[in-house]
Amino acid sequence: MKITKDLYQGSLSLLTDFYQLTMAYAYWKAGKGEQEAIFNLFFRKHPFQGGFTLVAGLDYVIDYLQNFKFKKQDIEYLADMKSKEGSRVFDQGFLDYLQNLKFSCDVEAIEEGTVVFPNMPLIRVQGPLIQCQLLETPLLNLINFQTLIATKAARVNLAAKGEPVLEFGLRRAQGIDGALAASRASYIGGCSSTSNVMAGKLFDIPVSGTHAHSWIMSFETELEAFEAYADAFPDQCVFLVDTYDTINGVRNAIKVGQLLRKRGKEMMGIRIDSGDLAYFSQEARKMLDEAGFLNAKIVASNDLDEHIISSLKTQEAAIDVWGVGTKLVTAFDQPALGAVYKLSAIKTEAGKWEPKIKLSQQSLKINIPGAHRVRRFFSKGMAVADMIYLEDQEVNPRGTVIIDPADATRRKRIMPAFYQEEELLIPIFRKGKKVYQSPHLKQIRERAQNQLESFDSSHKRLVNPHLYPVGLEENLHHLRMDLVLKAKKFDNGEEEG
Image (tube, rainbow, N blue to C red; front, side, top):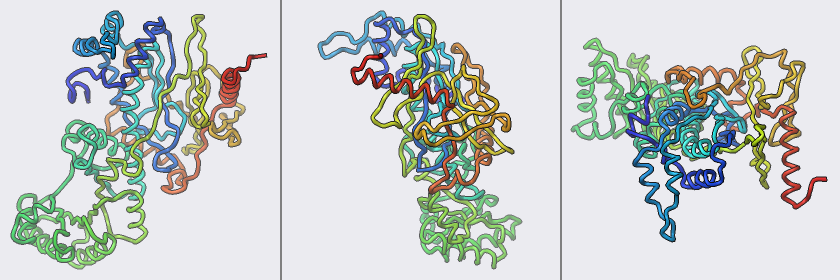
């Protein structure tokens, strides 16, 4: 799907923070614009206090990069910018540079629908410093939200334990862009359909929906409303039964269901959107079964999320299908993922890669330096550990130690010879040219389900999940610590001995 072309009819190069342009200008003025650099996009903590994250949004990134160009109108807008003193913010030479700029970076990424963990690069960008810098904001914008929603959707679907989850959050989503991206990410995370018709068209997602309370209220009686709806959609009847009285609504649905049977049709089910969902679903199930509608489904909605669904499961609610809206598409309990984009290496004039470290009073915010990759190890089809390691570092097949970047006392010995391996970062662009074939969204969704199945259930618990081992290969750990200590010496005004 061509997002930029279909939705925005042009370049999105100005979809960035102003300071990215001021830094790009300063790089250009300092003669550093073409210096080669490596940046990594990653996050530091799982959302929702969970034990896993499901990455999404790469197809948006690919589309953005394929259309990365400063158009004439973009340059004219930047040329009109004035400082407080009234002078132009950007020299004409820099604007000419931007207008002639052609994307030429190497990009590697972890495929959408992959289970990922803190500190591992979801996207790695290598190329001219100006280009890498200009990509920071848009890449974060495109990855942060969809990854957050895909993860929320996966959690909701895990709580539903295989029963269908319908996403219908369009009316509560954060604008048009948020609604479309949320529908796409929710489908990746496991939702079976969306109410968002535009998302259905653009992304080829199944759409679903029946009627609202207003349909019932527009008729003299609820029974009359059900009969009219059955006339319009005899093969797709799911009746909303809680407009007035839920139990009586179920009775009326059964009456119309019996009329449908006489016409050779079958009522699909009922939906309950308020009240005590556990109690009403149990009562409705008894009534439907006694009336011979054993296959009629009970759909529940009303501000559901993974915790409410889990609670209803514990209460033995007789619910077959879950409609989830607001708390899914807005990531109600955590509105942002918080992924970051950091410089990890820069090439010197001598052509040598120099790893870069960022210090912080919070150890969590000290980045991982160098050009690195991510390898996942499997045993009997189940993921057992992930290793972040230096690209040019050979991993000892007889065994290596991975060290948690947030807690150096947490370590695990890996014996590669006894495991199957998968490299998670794969090439997407080489010298600005796309080399990756984007899968269909259904394939991404299938990958997500297969990925989740390859992790032990303890890592997927909604509350207090077991920590999955992810660590730095010991050589990368030592490099990081050496750079931290060196940087702290200089920060404290000490000289090297």
